Every structure is written in C-alpha cells, then in structure tokens.
Length: 240
Image (cartoon, helix red, strand yellow):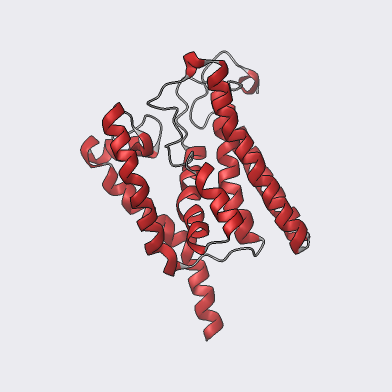
C-alpha cells in the first residue's frame, strides 16, 4: 500500500501503482457509459462533447507544461505525432462531423492504441505523481472512453466495410510521420524501433528488432476482429 503514495521511486509495469490507476480508469469509463445510457439523446450528446473538451484540455495541457518547463521538451518525443496525440485532430472530426470513417478510425485505431498504452505504458523513470505519468494515464483513459461511450450509448455502430478506409487513413498518416522520424531521428508511431516496456519490445524480443512491426500488424488485425466481429455476428443474426 505504501508504494501507491511513494513518489520517490519510478512506477514499474503492473506494480500496485500502475494497477491502481488502471482500476480507476476502468471505473471512470464504466461510470461515464452507465451515465450516458441513462440520459436522453440531447444530454447524451452534451456529455460526449464535455468528455471531448476535457480530453482536449488535458492533452493541450502537456504543451502548456512544456512551455513552463522547456527543459522537459524534446522535439523527438514531444510533438503531437504519436498515435494517441493524433487524437487531438481525429476526435473532433469524429465527434462533430459524425463522419463514419472518422468514427471507425477512432474506434479501430485510437482506442486500441490507447488501451495498450494504458496496459503497457512507456513509463520511463516517471514516478506516481509526476506530470508525465498522470498525463499518460488520464489522457489515454479519455481516448479509450470516447469511442466506447459512442458505441455503448448507441451513437455509432462499428462497420467492417469502413476498415479499408480506416487502413488508408492510417497509411496516409504514417507517410508524414515517417518523414519526420527520418528528419529528426525520432520514433513517432513507434515505427523506427521498439520501446522498452511496451508490446513493441515483446515482439522485438521474439523476432528481432528488424521484424517487430510484422506481429504488430498481425496484432492490429486480431484486435479489429475482436472489435468488429460481435457487430457483424449480431447483424447476421438479425437477417436470419
């Protein structure tokens, strides 16, 4: 129990501190979804906008922090070019335009990316109440919550037919990110090398550093199966 309040040692993967924050994330997401399902359509929509606004403030807060503490900023890691940071741009498109491709993108790409960032975060040497760790856990909780809220509250239904458009959108995002990585020697989207403590390291340990992206792609396809198959099965059942 003392470890939960120890701000002198770095947080370790699946430690009591990490698991406690994960439990809080699950409870918060569940609570918001239960609340949303009890609201009428107009209030449900307002709550979605509140969740989006809260996430945006939290994510932009990172750049306020960098402005206040410029020594903490590294151009190779601090630009909004990681998959979850891209949510700053994809989430308002999904929330306010109601475009099905954008909504499927945040469900199929941003949501699983943030989920794995919560479960196997790139913590580094961060302590429990450091800005980096708190921001990572809170921001990624909102990234997971918003598409789940939309699906569970009946505001959006995942559509497998949109996955080719989602894949194309992801590919188009990867092109400029790869160019920035080449220019800066950075590792945005984790496509230039595995990262300690994350799934990328696990796959690199299995197959070697040069091949970890292959199982990453396979894992993404498997996740899409988990996320979309229940809706496809339900649709088939209705037709029969």
